[in-house]
Length: 369
Image (cartoon, rainbow, N blue to C red; front, side, top):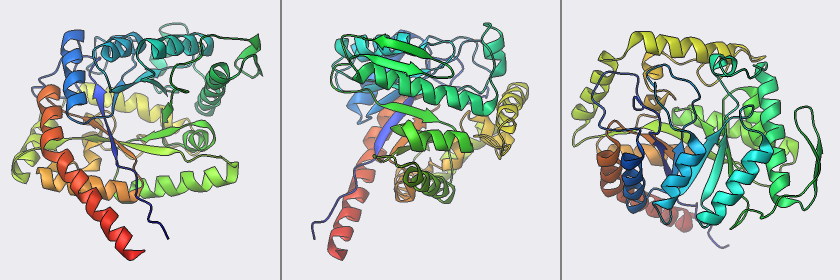
């Protein structure tokens, strides 16, 4: 029987196109939301073995992030500065119409050899919608709209004459050319609610989950696999997990950095963020969401990145990454305090160990078959 290797893990980093860094803390963060810093960071990430960059979407200031660049145009600028890196642009149904998004992404794909993907964010911040006059839908309605949004952009990208009679979008004999270059862009999404996981199991290429333990991640992956089967999905949803990397020469040094981040957390901003995201999750029928069980410490990093425990020496972090791969992760999405330096260090010190451990697991699997 031929032995089947598991695909190597993919690695992505959060693009700091939003001010304030990736933790809600007054600790020093040597990062910058401007384009010059981010062009250089993208080049460092590409040279260091990262596969993807994920640009953030915010429409209004707050929670330690007062300034932000628009994600799609920023993604295009990073693509223009690199050759292999794929960039995932976060987009928000409501502010974006699927026809506009499909056209923008198709054009960018031609400029950049097909390296643009999208992350469809259903929305957690009610104030962001109301401040720009966009209706705020109930929790599950936001995911129904996102699913229809995804079906629409895929239809526009693949069909010569696209028709849709949905609850949120209508298209009649719509033809868009040119189609995307280099294949259909990948569609990512996040969320931990029942509606989010069901949407991923029906229509998304990738499902992003907040930081978690291997056991917690495995439970989510098992749920998605069972739902894929129930919905008759013809392809496997790949899994991305958020993490915050603190890699130091000793475990003690790494833990001291984590303690300083927490000790210097900005309580008003953390609690304001907690109020918004947990209200959004509580609106789901099961009264849960991405941040339902998050503690104050978890929320100091926007997406529970500390819970993934990539905090320690290069060897410890690499071994924990492999544990997440065993639990079902296909991609690790990383944030750092000092992006340029730490992305380079991660590529130099951690990724080679990860690849060595992956090779060892492949050899062991082959021997057992």
